Structures are given as C-alpha cells and as structure tokens.
Image 1 (cartoon, rainbow, N blue to C red):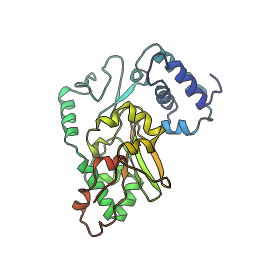
Image 2: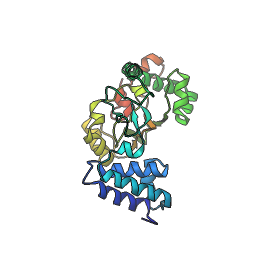
Image 3: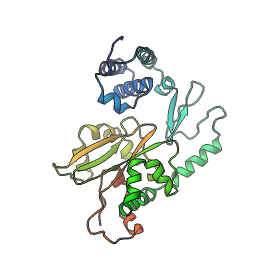
Image 4: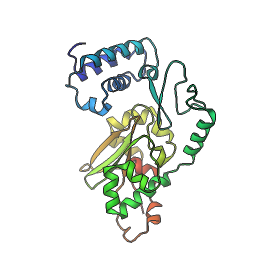
Length: 274
C-alpha cells in the first residue's frame, strides 16, 4: 500500500472488513486514526493526504487481524468504558457500557467499578443546564467555555476527567447537533447516561446523512436558511451544544434559566422553550 492516500486506504479497509463487521467503514476509520495519531474527523476532511510508510504497515497489519475476526479493541490496544480510556489486551474483558464487571489485572477492582457506575448514575442533565444558564448570564464565562469547555466546567466544580470538552454555540445562522457514529460517546459527566435513541444505529447513521430529517422526527424543524452542523464525538473528545437563549427571558435568574434547559437541547435535537 506504499504511497496510499487516506481516502484510498479507508475505501480498501472498509471493503476488506465488510465480511466480518457490520461497521466495516467505521472500524477502518478508527484503526487508521489510531495508527496515524489523528482524530477521525481529520481523516475524513483530508482524503488526499498521503499515509507515512510506518503508518501504512501498521494499518495493513491491523486490517489483517480484524479480517481474521479479532475484536477492534484488541487490535487498538485500548477501549472506552464510561467515559474513560482503558488499556486492553487479550487477557482482559473488552470494556463495554453494558459490562457489569471490568477486570483489568489489578488496575480496577469490582468495588472501584461499582463506585464509578454509582457516580455516573448520580449525574443528571441538571449539571449541563447549570453550565448553559451561567453562559447565558455571564459573557466572560461564556467566552472561556467556548475556548476550553473542560476548564470552564471545573470553575463550577464539575469535573471532566481525562476528556476534551468542546462546547458549540447555536446562533441565528447555525444549529448544532451531536452524535457518536462509532458507539455512544457522550458528555455523561454533564448529561448523565445517554438515552437509548442516542445509542441506536438508526440515529448514529442517519444523523450524519440526513440531519434535518432526523431533527424533524424529534419535532424540531430548522429553517432552510439556518445551517445544520453535525459533530461526531470520539473516545477522548465530547461535544455539548450551547443553545440559543430564548427571547423573553431577560431578567431571569440562573436557576430559572437552568430549568428550561433540557438534555435534548444540549444534544441539539431540541431547543429551550419558555
């Protein structure tokens, strides 16, 4: 595959994995992104870029392992579990959102996992609503939030562990919506456990192809003059939508504003209503 471009490699890789994976093209994207040390979004926006020789060889080797039926997490050497990235080898279970117990040879215990799951279940969309309401009221906080979502949330005592949080602002010209085409990556620390529809294959595949149609199914009609931007989350990067503040809320307190911000509006499939 010497001299292969990113686009050519992804096309060949997806074809090579079709017989063994229902998500062949996404698997190829994740593998190449890992081998090149680039975000998946970069690959899709730079299809003409050449792949360094060492990366080509590593990608080709990984494809062979995947085509032979080896799980993607074993080939990558890592996987995500409840918003955190864990090292994965053949000696351990593959972390999954539905896994009750992750055994990482002394790295994690059952009690640690139980506490982590209990903590996750205690997180609700009210956390994210607090962030949105503060941004609506405090222009300087909003500026910091858009520059570095992780640090801005820490100002409010909200920990965003080992993740990059990108906050995307809705404007009169742009409406943002969040998806994870690979699995169910989601800002759980601010919104809690993702809804089943967010994890469904239909939402993950259709939102990137026909976002306006999917939004209409949620009851949200975006006028044609407004651009719809779809943001694809990754294992180490999450998105949060900062909705437009509704008209008529001037003079409202932070608590009152937070009460009209729901989970779906911070994903982008709804908007706050008074």
